[in-house]
Length: 419
Length: 215
Ligand SMILES: Nc1ncnc2c1ncn2[C@@H]1O[C@H](COP(=O)(O)OP(=O)(O)OP(=O)(O)O)[C@@H](O)[C@H]1O
Ligand SMILES: [Mg+2]
Image (tube, rainbow over all chains, first blue to last red; front, side, top):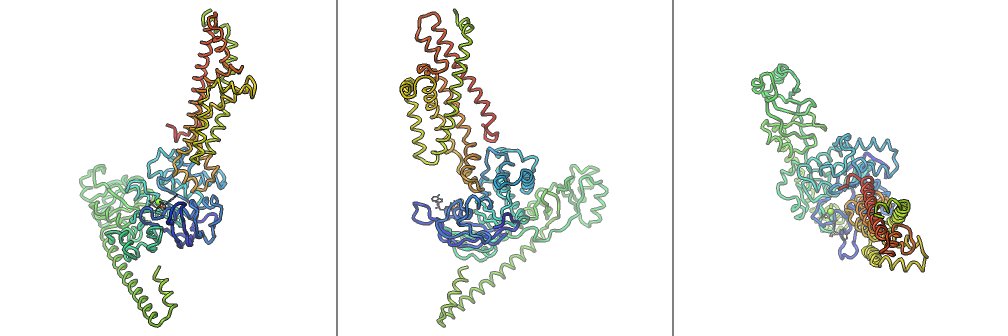
């Protein structure tokens, strides 16, 4: 396992079993799973199905009764657990920040334990706060109780990332915050992951969250048995059985919108003006742009108002009251569903896309959304058909093989079918 | 001789007694704190061991001070030793009990987080559990100190140090000219010392309890 890694490390679980003393049934029964380096795998399943237990066996917070754990190809089943945990980030529900330490002290814990020099720790702390979207100057010296739930959660993630571990384990990290904050945190995690390429194992019992975050989703049933382990697209369009479809729930087509992000569809440029620009200049731009509207940006280049030609006429020299304020913006990592929502609520028929610090980067309009959604659903339908076709062929081959009395093919077919 | 004249005449003696009184209480509290926290740390994780520690220290407290000191004299002799042993034993209960309650009261998810980021057991204890349990432990120390202030007076019975001496002298000569003054001066001295100690604890609390968990 590498000391640090920007590209994650693979995780191999081999017949992992946990039987708690005094219970007849194992809580986790014979789970095998391969998680690729740099991949986000989400465990979903009903309460008590063993998600947390499985997760905690990866950093051996819970010692497995049987089976093996590999990280980055190295067997860590018998490694010193304290050593192991310093190389695996761990973030939990309600952040688990130590209330008697400041934000900076919380984040610095792991780097300190592994002996980083002071200057490097300080630098890293600032860098991480910035990474999770908190102003280092402002939040550095605060205590956890002086933070909102969402901010605490961000610090929790920063602490988990502190020593740049290749693997990050997250147990319902956003379970205790309100839906809006939760949405933001999810977006941020996705953005982070784009920069960091960690291997992330994420536990939730919210299927929508799983779809949004996961590269692959493991739907678990009782005793952590894997009902289906596949991409969100495949699970949505092709649930393995009734248990999985039950979990996917209604509205699979709408949920599909959660799987594609704004950055994957056409972000177009739009005429903009700065709030300090002279009125005449804005006029000229409107005329030149061939549109009826410009997007007015504030001094920090954040979308501020939509200005129509008519608004400008009425403005008479001052922009203070002219135009329609921008209600909602999305980031490049927002889902198409968020974008659709924003377009529907803003009456301009488009939504501004913003960068990390809320600055304008482009717009997405209704037209783009409609055509992308159409294409997506079409592609899924084709995939599903193909998949079905494959299954049928496989079944035909099996029947054929059985008729021929060829055992080997049946065995191989069974293995493929189980995936 | 009225009370003020008495104080003026004897202030040298009184100050020496008060100093010795404070000193013996302070030293016994240091030992009781170290011992009490240690007992708490060793026993809090186990249901029965923790209860045993609390019950034992509580039982010690039910033994009358005079009796305990009396029983110690044949074993360790007169003077300072029986005083110190008795005071330390009496000081244990509040510290042990609050240490156990405080350590058990640490949010399990924080313990999980501490383990999860790779703290070893001793590090977890020193960096997370003890700091979080410190406010109740300090309260225990405070309560114990107040208690020892009074109990230390009884040490004079075993020729121990402190303000108990003048109280006992006064009580032995009730009816004589200075008897009442002696008892009064000794008692007031103890009350003043107790208040000073309490003020010191408030200050210690300010300095040692993290702003993040201060009420
Ligand atoms: N320390 C323990 N001792 C005994 N049984 C336990 C222990 N921890 C968990 N279990 C049992 O193991 C099973 C799986 O628990 P686990 O916490 O992994 O569930 P989960 O899927 O994370 O549920 P949730 O979504 O509610 O967090 C449960 O039946 C639980 O009662
Ligand atoms: Mg759980």
